[in-house]
Image (cartoon, rainbow, N blue to C red; front, side, top):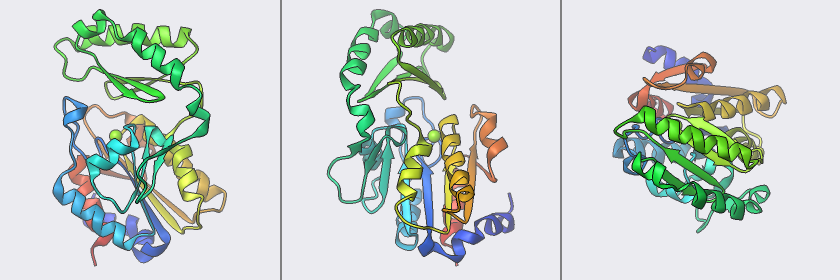
Length: 267
Ligand SMILES: [Mg+2]
């Protein structure tokens, strides 16, 4: 990707920032992937670029599988919106707390019960980390001593979740158990962008869950609610090939995203 190609792809947004949205995944897109998700952080230079973009563009949001409040604490920019739990939670600028999609609220008890039952000595011995995300549970095995063995234990948890009528989603060395309610970044993005008529929107992401957001942007164009969608795939060693297949533009890791963000505000 040359800087000329980058400028050309971004031209519709750069020409009309006050009618455009910039939507960014966090882990693997803004924050480099690290062995323990809790240690991930957004570099200060990236943060400053997001602040500059938020001053110029109509809508800027970060979208994450993390809780919306965790996402805001991590990115630490108070003037943008955060869609957490894969789009099921919305935290607007200035809000103290995120709002959950009402369809999920009724499942919190069942999910909590499953989380307690799944927290076994088997998983602990394999150092699988359980992340409590309210109506979603994450099981992480990146960086454990024996990732193959840990993955087998996570497979067993996935099987029992499915037996219990819950849904299972796989990401980059993470498995999530969710209620059987549709939750995806695409629905979240569509709800957020549906609030006002915009001309262009860009979404950047590195993982399978980001494909739903790509599809949502293209769906908005098809429905005549958006003129242009720019889907940016962030390439990485263990990222899914589909991200690159479906993207309009591919950038190389979080450093490539930083160049993309700089290009959005360059004169
Ligand atoms: Mg990601």
